[in-house]
Image (cartoon, rainbow, N blue to C red; front, side):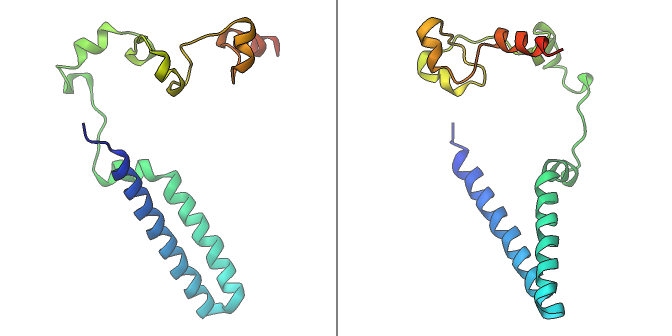
Length: 135
């Protein structure tokens, strides 16, 4: 399989450069129209526009491609497989080698005693007990 990281990185870099260039043009136009005060207003406006582009990027991409939700009848080959794995979005626990355990959100390796001193988070059961004790 081809590694998608270079493509993703290149796309992120191009998008960042494009938004930065547009923000620079907006600040330049603000400076030409209203001096330093206009540059400041244009900079704030550019930041709001960039934040909006980032925040709504997934929605904008879906709408630009006219994406529609898929109904179960739309994927007849997938539906029987999805029904076999109810709950948790159809995910099943997968045996995990120790070499890749750090890549998972919830570590499949648990440690007790002195081993727990090096854990970055308490076990999930302990987290749930703490949350429930708060009220």
